[in-house]
Image (cartoon, rainbow, N blue to C red; front, side, top):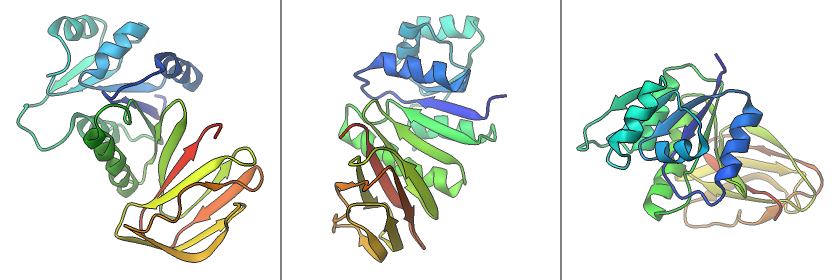
Length: 216
């Protein structure tokens, strides 16, 4: 089984062909749909491995169509605490993935977008490398260290997703940092840029959100 799992959330996606291309490039990843995102895959003629949620945003004909093609349907009560995207991620964790990529998580309602970003912390706690991916950016959590390969001038913003993040060191950036601290309410990590083609980010404690813009 491909250890890369694509979780498709129900947010607005301006460039649906981007999703199709990413699925093709990944080489048959496992695909889990959060509820109404199944409608989007039907437009692309892509069959998900699993559809998860309370099914309040997808019509029954679409569910029957995918079930006939082999998709597993996991229904939850509409009276639940978890979002459909969280349920989809919990389903993904059961498959022992090496990597999870979340699509359709940012556009549309701001509350859902923020909830989806916060789910990156849950993924970090599970020890699974996870990114929210859109056509113009990617978001992920750093709890130890990571290397960003890109182009000189690429925009990289940093925000704490815990009350504070300590021991932040940035190398290869226009604005470097050594053993810094970022706290919620002081967003000085916005709009940094790669000084060359590679940058390194490391932290000693906390959850640091990295927002990497493509082509900006």
